[in-house]
Image (cartoon, rainbow, N blue to C red; front, side, top):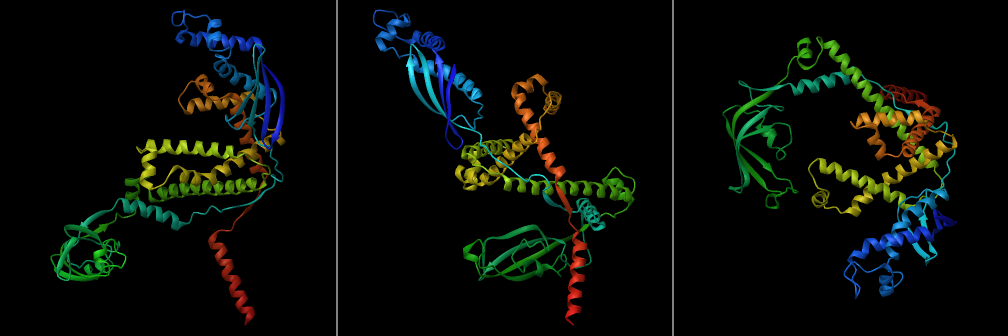
Length: 450
């Protein structure tokens, strides 16, 4: 195989002219004969016993050429791409045979290549870091959530129902004196104040006692789901069987022992504060990195092939379909349920795919400009890390992931770390501090006006 020429025909498109010598092509033709010959019938010969020369004479000299071309073409193109030092975007190739015969094969392949992009001013990016603040109120709110989860419902006697209670009722609704479908239930538990029922219904249960029978009057909303009831006035006959209220456990040391590994409430709260701080620190760092990513994307200059975006969308769709499958839902069934089609889904994924492609290109370019590379030791350590994470043998992981690809990923990680380390980070003021300053500023302005 030899690369005869490599010419750029348009942006990110190269045409390669490749020659496969006579010996290699002849070997491929002969292999095609041995593969197909057993199925070929020629007059005067038993099926599969005709010599190659007779078959070519009967069907034409080029009878085995198509299979031979398919056999030698992939390796020949791969070598040519390496020799031309090109990086292909995808496997969609425009292929043309220039010449074919006893002298060998010459073909032209037009390929889409990795774009040549530029990026400047990627060091010293100005970003704002969200403050990490955990107030006592935040800790108390988390404790309250746990308190709610450990609550129990108890029956209330000696007082009427009030908002926040759960009322166990029988009810039946009538419009113009006629009961309507779906307007009747027995022993239904209604959380008063939840807004589950028609506006005004729950409020009229409030104030009644266990054992009472009473009527309430409500008006169905104009946009009610049952068109026959829209805007209609209805009377509901109610019987209140039971009133329940939520009983919360006392928040003390015993509570802390019951819901955590800690012996005191103070220790439990300190642990909550620590976890909230850690979570908010991560959130702050994620937001900071998102700003850096957006600024890098803005700085990418160059024409990027649409095929790169489409390839990324394909990857994202496969991941999405896999996640659906892990939840027991087929992708086509999901489309049916949501009333969407694949094109709609692709449009949904496109903005993020474009951003991810640009970020990757930016970081690869930064790694190139800064001469950031991964050592053999770093690559080997990453292989061992992956093997441990996936509970696989290291050699098995290496069979799936080319070392060059892993080295490129590590170089990209070094590039984003360089961008992080060089960024100019301004600390945003906490919300309360900002509000206080704004209030003081307004008061000062008002005083000046007076």
